[in-house]
Image (cartoon, rainbow, N blue to C red; front, top):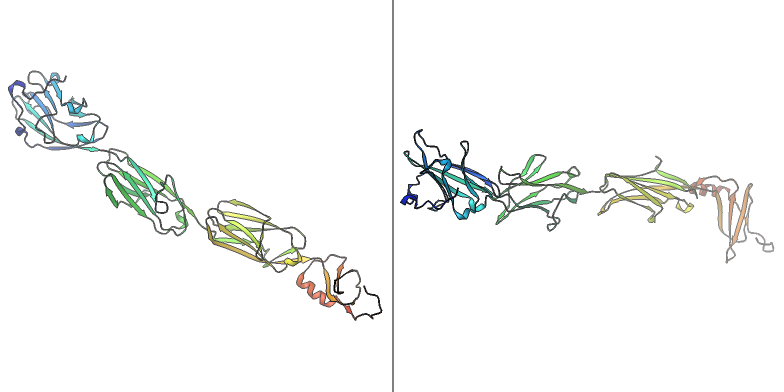
Length: 412
């Protein structure tokens, strides 16, 4: 039961000068929670009794709470509390735990308290209590020097291979000031905070040049200011982007790719080790080829080209180039020469009124130019696939051009 102030009770005002130094007990309480400020009420001797219990806060000479048992037992004593406590305080009289209980603890409650106990016969007892109020940090934000205005929620990056990045962990609030640390799989990386101003505490972690082994590495920033509360923490994962490590073009082990004239052929190119998977492009002697399809799996890309060769393609370079989106300057290429096998042909040009010896098994064909010059093509009826180089050699041996005909003879 709370009663009026006891200061002039029984005609005697309590004298602050009688509060002699006593043992110090340190207590921690979390803001918004409940805390017990311990005080031993029991008389030091068996035939004595407790008359008065007073609690003081800070250097104020008037008590903030009192228990008056001068005319009754302690369990029936009258209680009084300072209005500033707002009904948040009460005296706990249990044998196991005695003292002043503060509910909905506030930062303003922090400081030194004194518990004064007056007995009927024994000397006054003075007990000092120091209350530490813990206010957990309010928020934690992680940013990178690549995008300092963007908050990292779960994934940082992607960063290119070799990048040197700085992760900044900024914590707002907290009393006492929290310790901000960086961790990786239980190992402490950094416990030094570079910024401590006002309500802000910041720890910047500088990472060495990133390697492919840093992909999906988990880093955790943690802010803690007491063992009474769970640390405020956030884990992020490192994402990376890098180019292919190998690209290969199908060559059938010959160093060249043999294809037949007019016969559709599929050619495959693979690229490994790129994140995201590489984009593969095709060229034939600098000319872009578009009849392609691409599939991807993990860090592997496979592109298939459909090519319909022509004789003019013989000896040209077929190239596939693999590059990673976002890293166009990092690319690998693979090339091979085309060996085009085609229908056997014999040709001679610039024949003026010439004759062609008809070879067995051939069908001659001739076109006249506007200048009166004939272009003669002889094709075999049996399709023999040969390379262009072989055909040129055969042409020299088998094509026979006869002497010019007499002017009176009819032309072709």
